[in-house]
Image (cartoon, rainbow, N blue to C red; front, side, top):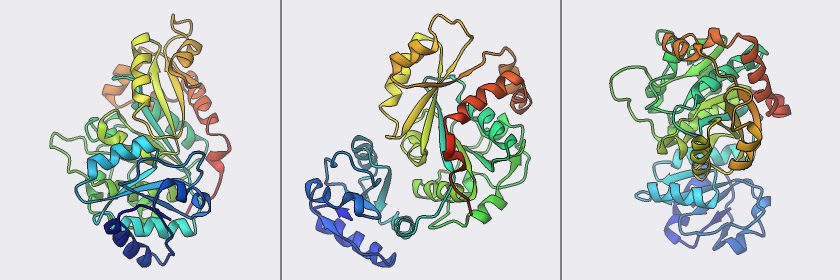
Length: 346
C-alpha cells in the first residue's frame, strides 16, 4: 500500500511495484490507509504525509524524490517509519524490499549498541556481547556503524585479517547473497566483523541504500548481528533504523543520564534498554538511572582499570574472557530471549 496524494510519487512507485511483481493499493491519507494498514504486506508512506494511524503493526517505508533526502530522514524519524527510500536512486533496493515482504524469510536479530554520551564504552560492550554470543555457538556478525569511530578492526586487533571492509561494498545494489557475504567477511575471536578501515585516509562514503542491503543480507546470514552504531547523526539515521532492538550504554553519572535522554529522541521506535557502566554502589545506581532515562536496565558493565590499555593494545577479546565480563554479557543476551534463536538463517 502507498499512502500519498502526490501523482508524481505514485507514478514512480507504480513502476517499482510492477517490477517487483506486486499489486499496489493507494490511499490518499492516513485515515483511509488505517483501514488496510495491517493487512498490507508492505506500507510505503509518501513525503507529503504528515501523520500515521495509531496502533499500527506493519512497519512503514518513507518514500520521496531526489532532493528530499535530509528532510525525508527527519520526517521518517518524526513519524516512526522504519526505512527511507529516496527515488529514483533507491528504486532497486525498494523493489527488492517489496519482493521479500511478499514472502518474508526467517532471519537473525539485529542488535544496535550506542553510547548515551561520548566515551560511554559502547564499542567495548558490543565486542563483549558479540564474543559471548559466539562462545554460545551463535553465528555472529559485528558491524562497525560509525565511519568516524577509528575502525572496529583496531579494537579487535584484526586490521590485517583478510576480507571485505565497508568501502568494498559501496557499489552494492539490490539483493545481496547472504552466503557470499558471510564468505567474504573477515573474522576474529570466533565472530565475523565488518569494519571501516583503520587508516588515515577519509573513508569512501557508502550510500544508505547499500548499507541497508548489506544489513538485510547480514540478517539472513547470521543469527545475531551486533551493530556498533556510534553517536553521529549519520549512523543514527541509517544503520540504527535497521536494528530490531537497541541497547544504550550509560556511565553511572548524572550528566551521562541527561545526555542519554536527549539521545533517545534520535533513536528509531524499537524496543530499547540500558547497559549501565560503573562499580556497584555508585552514587547514581541502576534504578535511579532507569527512572531518570525511562528505560529498563539489562546489564551492568564492570568498571575495569585494564580496559583503556586493552583497547589501545587490541586486547578487548582477551579481556572478554574474564568471569565478570562473561556475566555481564550473558545478562545482556538474556534480554534478547527467544528472539536470538527464533529461526534458521540462510
